[in-house]
Length: 73
Image 1 (cartoon, rainbow, N blue to C red):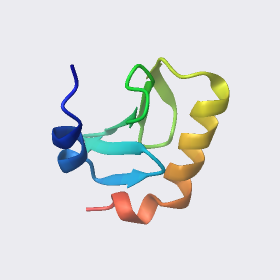
Image 2 (cartoon, helix red, strand yellow):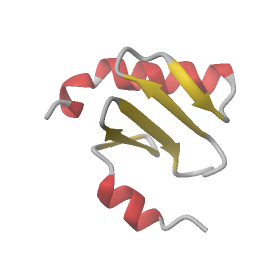
Image 3 (cartoon, helix red, strand yellow):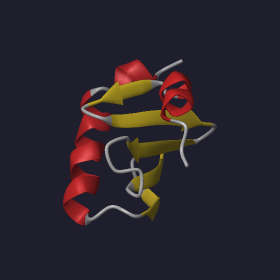
């Protein structure tokens, strides 16, 4: 079982129920409302691993692109 509080605390950004966590050169995105849905992308937004459908991937990539400045260190 996923510890939502731990994921939320470690996330760099949370938008509309999606937790975005930067890990080295990768960004992990988890749907906090349905934890079976996640995606791992590189810094350019290329999908490396996913359990999301294409529509949900596009939604979270748009969130990431529109809020990229909040992911900066």
